[in-house]
Length: 460
Image (cartoon, rainbow, N blue to C red; front, side):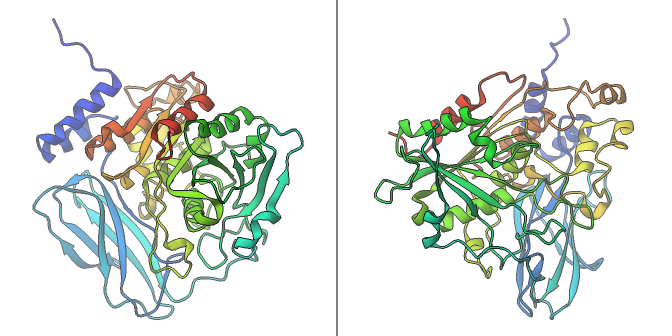
């Protein structure tokens, strides 16, 4: 009798177990299965808008997706300047120091590569410049202690609370993440804060609260949490019943597939991380436990949330004290999350060639930007609790042209994104911290609240 066929998730997990045998067997499995991610390398944020203090050495953080025994090659302006040899498989977050620094105005293209001259070759790119970053747009001043009361607004019907701190700008004009939409106006990097207290006001005498950041779906905004998503807000504030208070932060943020730079790469895939840094910096004023931060998100917000959950963007030497804080969180739960904004990576793993030619044509797809928003590379042994829920079903093959044209498969929210993330968690021995579900039909507000209640530090 033939052996029973493996389910999509079982095949993924079985393939991952091959890692325990050898990196060679893993490379064969990667090439054989469309469910397994290919090699990738991503360089983390550098300086402020890729500008660095002159004549100062700086660290370049990079991450390799899957284990490799390949040499790591470092190029500056396409000239080989260094080589790191390894005696055992390497993957995950790594770092190298660029010596000497840059002169004022000096520009360099950095390229880090692994598995060169093989089918699994992957490189990461970054352009760096010495000197001050470009001037920011005209934005509000950084948040200060005396500002909080000015943002308080009463809610007449007290549903589900009687007040909200509205339109707190979580940007900072001195750092790179102050955006410009193209019309000279600052983008909507603002948040609303809801406290679980009856009047919705912060109580400085109370124990520090759990922070839950909510990231909305496309076509919505932060105000949606108090209108059509009011039941979600009520569920999240209800987490306070399991322990100390809760603060829910509803954010507006940029769309990584629609708001693009001149080179057609996203203006940001890190706005939620910036909000985490802001909250941690002002934790005392906002009465937030800086170690008890969660993100709850759907669709568009879910894709950005997964990146925020696993990618540390702290910059200890940054000119802004906000940016020096860790962006790590305790947990994230999403519905229909993209875990990568890299069209090449997605196409090579999940699409037939005929579909790949049509996928995300608006995004720049050249080799220098193969990976510019790829959450799996950020996973490490300390990654947070994660729950990825998908309305659709896993597929055990590459999406065909007929499936694409008939919209039989949702390529924006493909559940196989979750399988790739689960595989990466298992690679780091933390598979118990992630749960991926297909065919989700539950009550997301209730399930998100239960997720936070299970994993929060401030529980009874």
